[in-house]
Length: 525
Image (cartoon, rainbow, N blue to C red; front, side, top):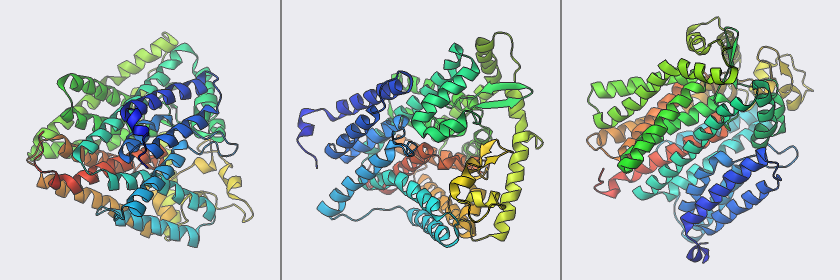
């Protein structure tokens, strides 16, 4: 499969040219009236790169391309992202090389069988108890589609240099996504809020997530926060909501801080600037779940410092979190300054009110969460076997007739949340899994999480006296994983496609280190 193409082209130059072209073409299709058939051209170029370049280069290319995965321009399929086809193609090439040509075994990590058990339970529950089995099977296929990148990665990446290369690609990808978030935020300086809202939903969101999502975004989204009579625009970039954007910023904080171990002093200063902007992005996203979830890894860092466990590593991450906390404290000033540029002197600060609302159980959003938590728990007590994936809607539409199809229920308007019923969730990863996969599915998922963290813990204990990039990468993966799990108490954003892809990337790179680190011999910091 590795043809003469590589003799005439520098692989890295081709990769960067393709990524640059994707940036330009996606930008111009969304805002410059370039034809949408360019999406097909980008898909073909990506497919050619995967077919003719080595797998490790293809992995780096697919990671770098994450901010540019848009929907296919097909009627009724425009929400199907291009990454899904490219991941399948990469997996098919890897299968051919790995099994057909080289007869190699499939490599797994200690936690993989528990992830497999969770998916098997979800599959069984969906078939056995799901009212809308086809929708549940689509969700399982979606999970497996994202997992394909992980499967190829863990069976391909075997050297420390490859881990470093993919980490660099991840940091560049996240930097691009965060920069696009700042562009989105600052674009409102040149238009009114309502004009921005309509334009972004009708052009950017439609390109990335399809016509139906765009139509919903025209009247309901999480792009604004409301309190004390004020309306504040959040940062969300190319993501469908501010929650998923905040998760990417959290990954950026972790990957970026780890990479400071492996770059020159000049690049290190740039990285710390990027870390500060990632921290500010977390604040400007206005995502309370991520704010509260951050307390879990920060507490872990403080304990690590107190116990003198991996102190040099923990200290560096401690300062990254201190940056976020400082930015959180001064962010009302940022917010006030941005609003002043937009509205002049006519502004009522609501950032502090939003932060304070975390503890206010009577606040509208919190009250809604509590209601749906109670409803979800109540439903789970009478349906402990689960409803099947993508069947959460059944727990919220008990008065639906048997003749109503999934789309009928999904597009039914929910007055409480001002959303189509299909977009309503349990506002908790764990309650969502409890309702959809039952007690067995939730238990399997929780044990998978426990297994991941226990393997990370064993690795870090064994190498606690080593201070290098690879140990730090596992350390940050553990911290961000804890962050995601803590934030998951309040939302289900892990199921967003780009967040899930980055979760698998982080899990795969960390797993490769855990499995291969001892065979690499002495590693210099």
